[in-house]
Image (spheres, rainbow, N blue to C red):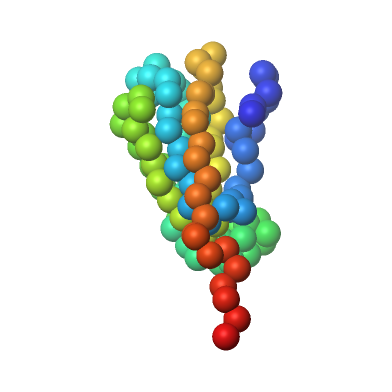
Length: 109
């Protein structure tokens, strides 16, 4: 959740504790300014290292929701991502689904 008047990103660069995440944007992307899902184009450990060194040379991209109701499904536990700052008064409304493999703890044989 973002805070009214905040100047930074909605959330910091992170990866999820759940293996797979699905995010559905419920509001109209045409009226939003900012509030975009941005992902790193690096292995999560390399991305964390770049950020910890203060590097601005990382490669990232914004993922488009295209329209309300469309889901972005990702292996959130392996991809560093965040949401960019919202720059107008439109509230970003999402529905998030968390999924994990059927066997969270592999059998020991």
